Image (cartoon, rainbow, N blue to C red):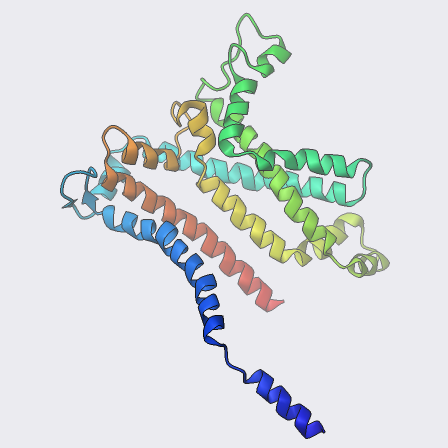
Length: 304
């Protein structure tokens, strides 16, 4: 009887997929892969190739080698301010918005009153696109009819929050952080719910305070969530485009690399080769941050 059961198990394990099963698998795996190649990697490879050319989208392609990169680094005054703004964006989201989202997640996880209301309210901006957040920022920080100047009562000499290049980047960062904080809060809240309560109890028995328990037990346990939050923060910081374009088309103190790509590719000059070079620089910087972070996290996971 045992021999027959083993034989049946082997037959079931060695059963091959039918032609219909293989067709379904090919469709389910092939369609997403094809879309990924066409929508993501196709334009990426095309941008890398076109970055070595001088092309306006109509005339013949003229190959110029590294001339676009040389002009970008030496003769394009908007480039370095855009790089600084992108790094500032990344630093603000990583050092201010992300820790604040973690703090809110910890407070809500402790079971404060009306926690469901706070959770829904803080998460609400996440469902909005950054373009909508940009329009909301205009309503709040506008010089003449903005809500902030009305609250401050500054009507005779109102502050130009979005027109002053020394102020507008910070106002837009606050608006972007408003959305990013809710996203981070939800991710960390899910991570906190998954932490084994016995770990906290063991730390408390050993005499650890709540702060020590969090930073030495709870936070390291949420390593997968930390990886996700880190990658999302880097991506959000480097791909920022919608909100500044909605405010003032990414000019007058709000220059970003993504805006420069758009202005050069679809602008009046239509310098597709030069815009592709900026896109490649943005791609390299993004991949550098993401790959470095992931490698460090994977190594840390293996050494545990």
